[in-house]
Length: 205
Image (cartoon, rainbow, N blue to C red; front, top):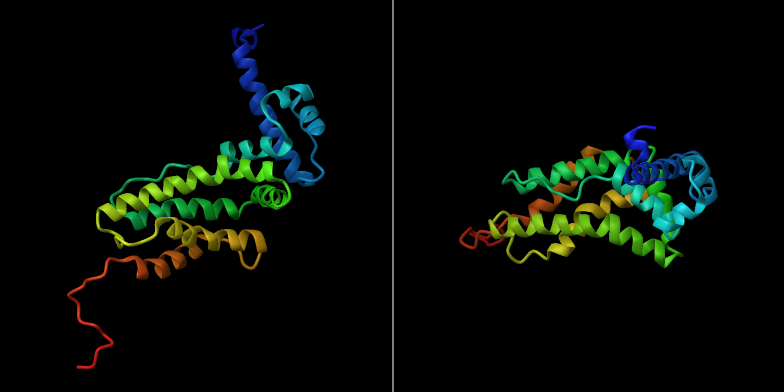
């Protein structure tokens, strides 16, 4: 027996990751509705009670699995250019939404419509921290004069990411990095600070 296998903490961490991997694998293969805690436990090689010791439901397992393995980071880069930093993060989101694994996220969002606990898990683990990270980056941009001082930052976050979710959830068109460029171009035309001394283009000469 190796030192690692004899270490309870190592065994716990290994089992934890095995459960997350098994949940993602099964959900991708057979869908969220057909994936059960029993099946996850069997695939991961653990007892069902082990799963319930760490998570209250299969949805909670999958939310953590997505957070660890697939979803873009909470942290935003700090290059001094808010447009470049938003593009970096949003392109990562778009690329994830374009993968097969994003179908699991889509199914969990669907389940959340009738399950408040799942909805809360998504908001607390996946959406909320990333919204807050984006809001902090926008706040710094506002302090540095990169965006209008009167911009409602919570609304800006929704305007940035809602188009990506719209395509993910409804399948109207593929989610792509090109879409990110379109969103930023359209939005930042309205976010750039206004020059109060500039002549009004609508005023007659």
